[in-house]
Length: 202
Image (cartoon, rainbow, N blue to C red; front, side, top):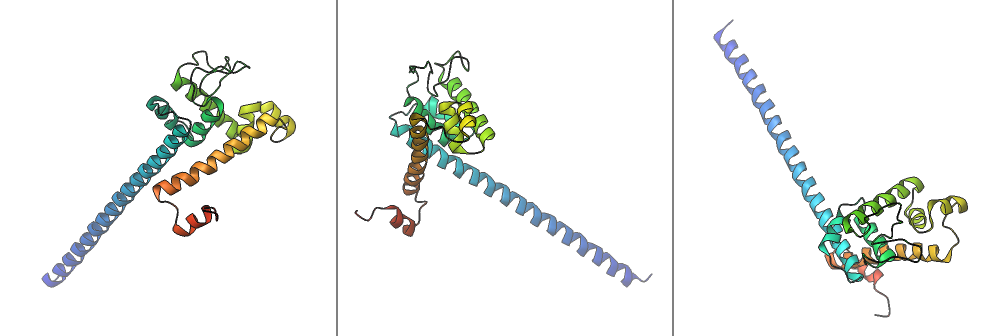
């Protein structure tokens, strides 16, 4: 084999190695960029959720950091925050005429230490999550939380109880209201959308 052929093959091998290293570098950069973007997106989403939870709590005149932290650790912080507002108006020591207790108005069989804010929220949120999984919709899960799952099964939908229907309507109204308020506060609504949301009389 001629020296020139050996050098030519050596150059080809070197070029292939350089291309492989370059591709590896590009893939590494892309992977790092995607990780950074994903982490930033998750951080932004969590901050957005935390802002909504704070707003719900503020609406019910509560800014307890312990309650906020407990809510943020649940499966759906905003929904849980709204349910607490409807159930107890954030009064951790309240007992209903039916014997439901604490922030999420749990029955004694679900939690003995009901005055413990974190546990009350944890158990109540877990129960609500199970109802959501079972019934497949927020409306039915909320109705079941108020009236019991048996009532939802019996009536194959939201039971015709006035209290339960009002409860479900409140949850839906608060969800929509805080969605719009946080959009205004964080600038997440475009100008044309804002015009649609602002009443014509203003």
